[in-house]
Length: 239
Picture 1 (tube, one colour):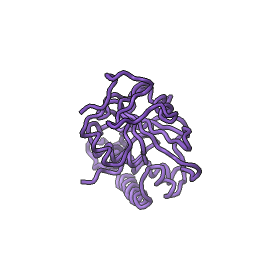
Picture 2 (spheres, rainbow, N blue to C red):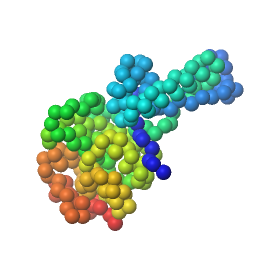
Picture 3 (cartoon, rainbow, N blue to C red):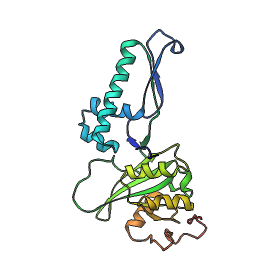
C-alpha cells in the first residue's frame, strides 16, 4: 500500500468540537472535519490564498486542495444547516511548531541558487538519538550552502513506521537526513527512498545543520558520520 501523503498544518491543530447551543452533544448526529481540511479552509477562505499557494504550503497537489476544500465546506454546511455536532481532528498531518530553532515560516521557494532540504530527528532541541522513536523533525532549507529557514514539525504516531516517515520526509522535499542511531531496516527503507543518510550525529539539532553545511559532518562507507568528534557510543547506526 502506498504511504499516505502527509500535509503540513501551520494553523490551530488540536481536536475540538462544536455543537448547536442548548442541545446535548450526545443526542445529536456527528460529522467530522479533518485537520488538513480545516487548514485548507483557513488558508483559502480566511487568508485568501490561491489553491496553488495553499498546495505549496501543505505540500500537496492543487487537485488535492480542491478536493479537501469541497469536502470541508460540505461538512461545515451540513453541521450548520442540519444542527449536527462538528468534530475536528485527525487526518494525515504534520504540525509545524514554532521553537527556538525555528526561523520564519516556510514560504515559496525561489529558483535562485541551489537549494537543499535537511531533516533532523528532534527532541527538546537535540538530535533524537533514536530515529524510529522520534515525534518531531527539524526541517531546514539551505540555499547555496547557507541556511535559509527552518521549522520544527510534530509527527506523532509515526514511530517505527518506515513508509510513513519516508512519506512525510518526501512530502517536505528532504534531500539529507542527519540522524543519531538508526536500525538497519529503517536505514534501508530511507536509502531506498533516495535520501542521503548521515548517522552518528549528536548534540543540538540546529548546530548539527550548521555543522553539515560547514562540511564538518562526513559520510562514511557505512553512512555513519560523527558530529564534532562525537564518541562512538553516541548513537551510531545500529544493525
